[in-house]
Length: 636
Image (cartoon, rainbow, N blue to C red; front, side, top):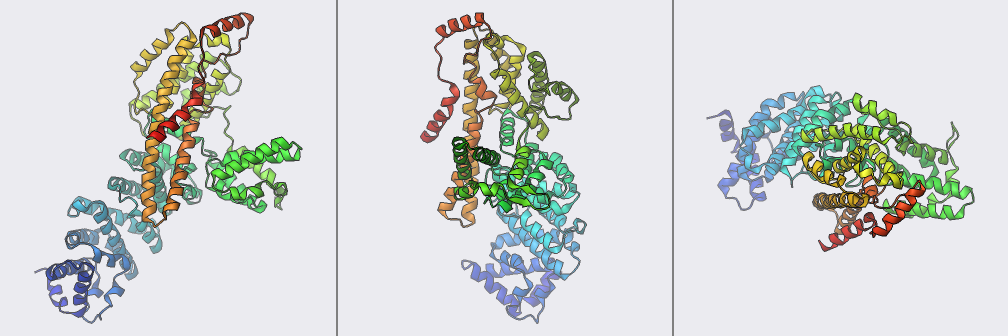
């Protein structure tokens, strides 16, 4: 007979033990008396293994058991008898690994609460593995890392962290929970300041919130790249503002996590470049400047502006720009321009669900208020500083810590530099590096590389836009043009891989065409198909994230109207991303390749007129894409 069995033979005769059996029976009225007694005995054995000595005190009065069992531990009463039986073995492992971390009786009680959290998580996420010792060790190890006194966390911080680690957020996706558990374990091992653990958990949850999943790829990227980035960021907990973002939105930290945990694929590159457009600035120093000015701007009473800037709401960059336009047009007496800017401000605020604030944004006196008495800074001056810091510098190619790429890109520091041959050589090097990373299935896209690809997209767009008719006629046969088309293929496709031979064969067909409009029609058709596939992938992602959001809101008790409102907001975010896929970028310019450019010579003018007579031009493709996509969406 074991020590516990001997103890229980005595304890079962006491009133508290009988009360425990009655409590089990009350919670599970379908159980027989024997099953209820067995369940109560399993609960007692859990208490015994976790050193809950007061539970077995013969002098304990009826009802006093509740005072010795905290609410987390008492919730185990609600588990099924067979689940409790399986958890007894887990409690033995937990007692050996975790309970020694307690420095006093208060911490003993806290760690018993953590046991209960982890046990319920096992039941929720792996009900068919409750007797699996590997699972027992995994969960106990996670709890041990939380309880480790080397973390320098207070008892309250450990408790809060445990609640975050053993969350029920992932009940629809157990695999994501266990991938997340591994990520948290790596964070405990890798973080230099474990005070950031709670915030790191939030950031992982934000990844899940925006992606609808946590995959092994994300977990590997998190360990290799995100944890070192967190260690390099002072005051990470302060900078992390994603808890203020709407569902589906990314702030700077969320965007950084997104790209660093992504595998190199054309689809993920397209997502990264698209999301970068939403982030006010990818620069940490500029971000802190924006946050500081946002606080000062509260003195001017632009309702909601501080929150929009701090939470990096999509469209806040445009809002600030339109505020500046409105002020300068109003002060300059240009009423027409002021009205246009005012309408844009109202539209911006409407997209933030805050149109009621518009009157304050149209009050010129607020722009001229002094918001910092020490320096005399006015609101309009602070807005200009914010605008300067959210503006992305498309003229200057960013450095990526790659000697070959940096050496080639810096010759394009001058915005007007248009050596297409040199640009083609640079693009060839960049494209080859992108292809290599795709082929090797590399995990982790550096934000600097996304910056460079964003710059390249703009550079390619401007080069195509500025061509004259004479060059337009032969561009499709030039090496640099092939590299531009290849870059478009690598960054504007829903594919998860890349077929180099397939692309070469396709582009050989393009170059074989005698007339540019025939060659460009092939390009346009291919890119149009790519965009439709991207739209479909975006639609699927929106549906997945939306379903995850709906379940989460329903579990939190939100009403149907509020849930529908949040889902509609999410759909709006994805709709904006779809629009940006074909607006003001390389794809949009490819769709215009058959728009006749302006000739530079008289001979070119005559030839252009001859070509126009031969060609019946179609409507620009990009103007019909969203209309077609929306029609397809309604049908679906």
